[in-house]
Length: 114
Length: 120
Image (cartoon, rainbow over all chains, first blue to last red; front, top):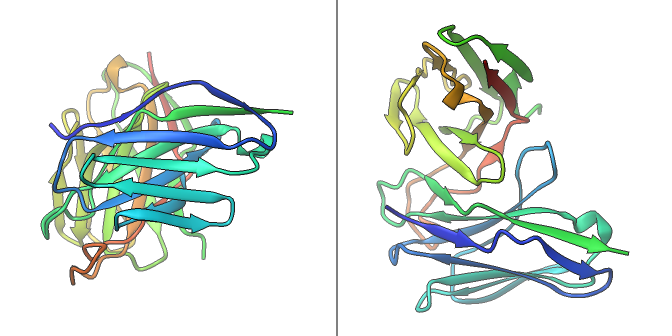
């Protein structure tokens, strides 16, 4: 059973701070890693993806991947109240027969307070 | 582009009833997926399809059925609804080239707005 683990939180940070969200996964063959944001009552929307070890930056968001440690994280700089949401980590299986299937973590609730 | 659309938005079923959740995408994506999300949980894959006429089970397929007669449509059928099927259902689609590379040839999934189903 492939597993993706996240701290469910809630994680509370003050406005302007850095929010750090973490995710570990069990399948060493995992190939691609995605971070989705989900506002209450809405569908998930993709905010970052990463394939290679190291950091990937996009605006205020940085995804970090360490395949040896089977660990992926998301940093949100200058956090805003509008960043308050549930953040879902998703991992795509490796191999040509994965058919893009994702395994999701249970999500981390982030609250950014003014 | 409407993206991925789902109907209905909400539905209440009695135990034992059946229904079909509709999902349509207009992005010409070859892959489509059905997930369910229980409160406070992540998404679990019910069924997926890699193209018209080809479907396969995901992690939690029991009590559901799917078909894919066209690229655009991927309906999910619930037979003999049970309270355990109370959940929010999301349909998603993605494009895949199956040509490998760092991403494995499969790109991000786009989600529909969801159907909130209650079985009582």
